[in-house]
Length: 159
Ligand code: ADP
Image: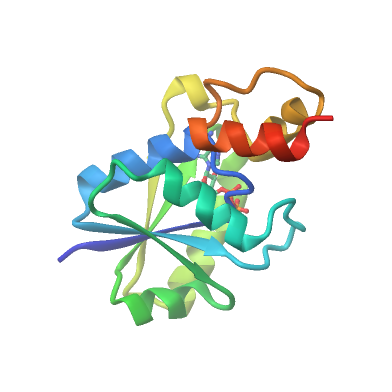
């Protein structure tokens, strides 16, 4: 059984994340999306809200489940008996940080491999912060986030 963990803050999940999730679901037997409870950057949404939005967005993927963690990612993987970390790459600007994190995780847990998936070009500019900003200013976010997320953002962010 090939189990992968896709960690992130998902504040909120976007169609870019979803694209990576669907690709990972085709490569692995089981994909666990791991919501970071307390990311370095202060999230706009609580981890319960971030998890609920994800749950509504991946309802069509049978082998995908949602979890959360606080602490060392590699320990979470060991607990889940997972051997792969999935991360998404949008542009060269993601590379430095992702490379550093992958090597750090390898140092901590050599048995765990980080797998990078390229986003679809349609989402290569898309980020959670961008989406929040557009929603706050009353812009149209349909097409950028799953339907359930657009509804939640409109209710909670639009002024
Ligand atoms: P983190 O705070 O861990 O970076 P994010 O939720 O911002 O959490 O991102 C989680 C992962 O998803 C990262 O690997 C990030 O590069 C990737 N990602 C974010 N947006 C996109 C996108 N539009 N396309 C592909 N990957 C993305």
